[in-house]
Amino acid sequence: MSQMPQQAALPKCPSCAEPVEPGDLFCGACGHDLSVVPEPPQDHPTLTVTGSPGDGVDWPVPEPGSAPPAVHLPADLPGTDSGGAPEHGSAPQPAGSGVRFDRPAEPDEYPLQAPDPRVAETVAAPEEPAQVCVACRAGRVDSDGYCENCGHAQPRERDHMERESGPVAAVSDRGLRHHRNEDAFAVGHTALPDGTPAAVAVVCDGVSSATRPDDASAAASRAAGDALLAALPRGTHPQTALHEAIVAAAQAVNALAEEPATAREHAPHQNAPACTIVGAVVTSGLLVVGWVGDSRVYWVPDDRGAPAARLTEDDSWAAQMVAAGLMSEAEAYADERAHAITGWLGADAYELEPHTASFKPDRSGVVVVCTDGLWNYAETAEEMSEVVPPDAAERPLHSARVLVGHALDGGGHDNVTVAVLPFPAPPQGAGSA
Image (cartoon, rainbow, N blue to C red):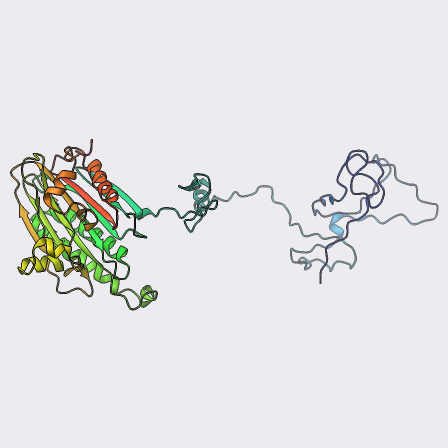
């Protein structure tokens, strides 16, 4: 077993050369720390130095009759390589000589190696600033999302999301009761082949009783939004494009159920990932809506003297009861089964039947696309018209924030997601004031 080397006693202080006693820890003259072992000199090859008269060195005169000391030149001693083996052509080194000649001959010039670009990029990349806790405003946030000072869990990225794309904007919030946000949205704007502007919004609500509802809503909104923004510039009719977008969203959600079984080990008995979807396409003279589930689209004219309207019909138990004439709307939505959905996107859904409808409003206004997290607090078209700000067409992002705030003020029992689109779609580049 190897041991740490023992420190040799210092007869003199290495700093001021004053005598010191064995066992002293500090120099009494200068206070130097005697426990520090001086750094050993570099391991360069050392040779016995011999001199001759006239070389400027005062060497002792040898006694008469004694043999002169042997003089060695560097070339007289064998060398070894870095592994300690004798160099080629060298005789073995005598044992006990205590000398290692393991330095190769130094070249006149040293070639310079080009720097590794990967290393250069790593060095040049600035460090990300440490995230500060939103609660105590002092502690750093660790990799798990908790404050190292007060332990407060930090908001996740999806807890509150806002986005604006040209004339359309959307806001999504976790709400006050849910532990995560299972809603998602996609917004965008493009141009039709004739150059007229078009704005799109897709809102999805994850089914909480299913596995990974947040993944389902994110996949559906992303697939539908991408499909719309790709189809409209090609000249696909907006109603056809929205129908195809819902089909693409359904395929994206179905694919989540086909992932490896390890993705569902934590909840093997739950349903496949599922969500609802609702979308709207606004052009210069046409308004198209499409949906599966109970998320909704409302039409609110700028002239609040004109009637507002709900443009979608829920795929829900309550809607079926009303459509069959078995209950009034008030009775159906007061029932505890009212929000049980009868249509959704997911591998275990019934046959997919996307609903689409086209409208040509005769006046300007705004289109509100939302989940039940909002319309639970403004259910009728008249109630929705009352909470939509009067300048919603000019400030869609501000209006979406106001509507989310209305739901939170009402209790925020569910996730809340709202998209606001002005009608008709304004020219490219227009947005919130």
